[in-house]
Image 1: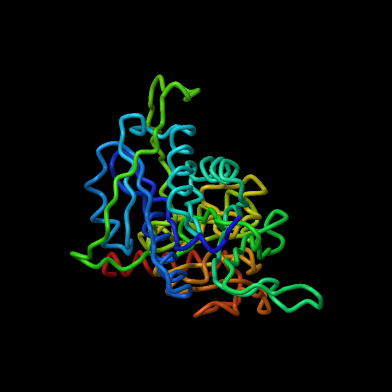
Image 2: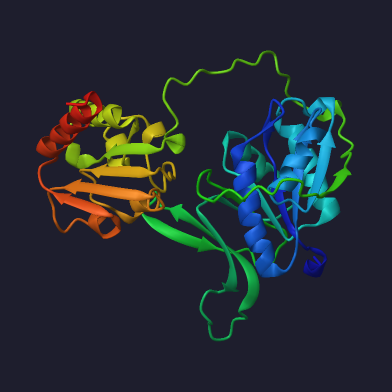
Length: 347
C-alpha cells in the first residue's frame, strides 16, 4: 500500500427521505477541524435517489467537495448497494480519513465498508484528534506523526481507549451522534460537485424491501432537550422518578438518567446520558442523586449550566457543576418544583 496516495477527509453524509441527518453536519464540523490540522480538504459522499439538491446544504456546512451517488437502487438504505457505493468512492478518491455516523445505518455500513476495503475501523468514537502514535515515544519503535487518534469507551464504558491505524489507509471511525459540534452554516458557500456511478447491479443485492413501517417514538429525544432533569442511583427506586418528572414539567424540560438507573431496569436506555448512552448539551442540566462518574460526566459536561443535588458533599459531580446543593433531594426537588409552579402561577 502506497499510503502517500491517500489524502483528505471523507464524510458519509447520511440522508433519509431526502433530508440530511444531523450527524452529517456534526461530522463536517469535526472533518474541517481535522483537515485544518492536516492542511487538506473535506469531501462529503452523498448516496440516495433524487438527492442532488442536498449538495448545496453540505457545502454550506463545510464540504469542499460533494460526491453524489444518485440512483433508483439507492432510494432506500440497503446494506449491499450502499456498501458497494461508499467502498467504490473510497477506492477512487482515496481519502486519508473516513468518518461515518454511529447511527443504526452507520453501525451496519461502517464495518461492511472497512472489510470491503481491507482497513481497520474504530467504532462509536467520542473524540477524534490528530497526533503522534504511539502517544509517547517507545524505545526501538517508530513514532508516526499526523495520525488519527480515535478515542472510544471500552470494557462496557469502564475505561477509555485511544486507537490508531498507523499502517493502513484510510483510517476509519464511526462517531457517536451528539458528540461533535455542528459546523457553522455559511450561506452561499460553494463546493465542487461530482457525480459518481459505482456501477452497482441489482443482481448483486441479496435483500428486498417488502414494506417500510415508520416507528412512532413516544419518548422525547433527550439530545434535543433544552432542559434535562437527570436522576441517578441515589433516587432510590423507579417510583421516585415521579418527583423528577414533576420538576421537569415545571421547567418545560425532559427527564434523563445515568447508566446505573438503566442497568437497574428503572428507565429505558433511550434516556441514558453518558459514554455508553447519549451525549447531551442542554441549556440547563440537573444532576440529582448522580455521583459523577467520568463515564456520565463525559456525556453532559458541555451543558451550558449544570446544577447538582447530592447528599454527599464530596461527590465528583460537584467538580463539574456550576451550582451545587448538598442535602436530601427528596426535600429539595419538591420545594424547587413548588416554587417554580408558584412563580408560573404568579403567586
